[in-house]
Image 1: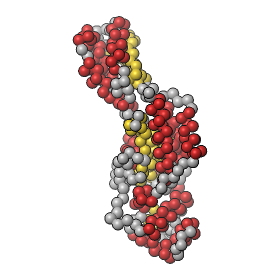
Image 2: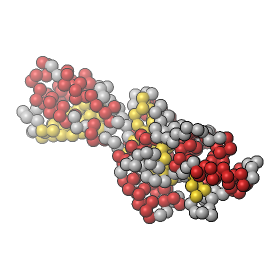
Image 3: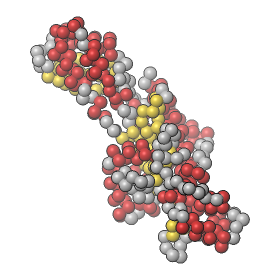
Image 4: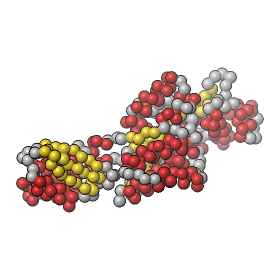
Length: 355
C-alpha cells in the first residue's frame, strides 16, 4: 500500500521492533495518548518485560520512528513511523457485509447526474469515516458529446447547447455575423449530431475543424463561431472538487490548537492543493495508498494530516480520485478498505450511468 513518497530503510526493522511499533501505533490511534512501555505490555499481552519494551522504544526513537513529547511521557509515532507501518505492517481490514451494503445502498437512491453521484460519494466518505471526504470530479475533457442543439436568442446571438454523457448540460451564447437563419442553425445542429456524437470534449473542436468541408462552406463563419465557444467548455469544470465533513476534523485533539486549525483551514480552502494531495497519495500502480503530513513535498502537505486515496474508474479507465483526509493518527487499515470499496462501487455505478 505504498504511496509515491515513502520512507526507505537500508535495513528493515527486526520482528520485535515491528511488533512494538505496530502496538504503539494501534494504541495511539485508539487513544490519542502517548504510549508507555507498561501500556504496550498490558494492552497487547506481549511476552516481554516493560524494561525490554522500553529499550526497544528507545531504539525506535533513535531511528526516527517514535518521538517523546515530554521527558517523562510515553512515545508517539512520527511520520516515518506511520510510513513504515503503512508500507510494511498494515493489513487492510475486510469490511463487514453490513458496511458494504451501507456503501452500496447510497447508490440505489435517486441520483440525477454525475455531479450528484460524486457529491453523494464525498458525503458518504465523511459519514462513514468521521473525517473529511474528498472527491475529484471527472476530467470534463474525457466526457463524450451526446447531443447538440443550436438556437437563435436574438438577431445576432446564437445559443449552443451540448449535453454530455456525464449528465451535464453546457450552454453558452455567442454573437454571429452574418445573422444565421433558422434553417442554417438546424443544418449545423444536424451536422454536429450526425458526425460528433460520442466525441470527447477534449478533442471536439479539433475533430470538428478537421471535418468542416465544402458542404458547410456557406456556413463556415457560423461554424467557426460555434467552435470558438466549444473551445471554452472543458475549462469550466477544470479541477473541480467535492469536499464534505470538514467539521469532523476539528473534533480531533490534534486540531484543537489555533495554529494547527488555521493551517488545516487554509489547506481546505485550496482545492488545487487538496487534489494534489489525492494524487500524491495514490500509488504508482493506481491502488489505494496513503500520504502522510508533507512527505518530501512542503508545498502540498500540512504537518499532522493523513490522506487515504484511490482512483475510481469508468470502463476500466481512471477518471478521478476519491479520498479521506484526517489527522495523521487515523485508522489507515480501516479507511483504506472503505476508500477501496467505495471507489469500486462508484466506478461501476458511473460506468452504467454513462452508457
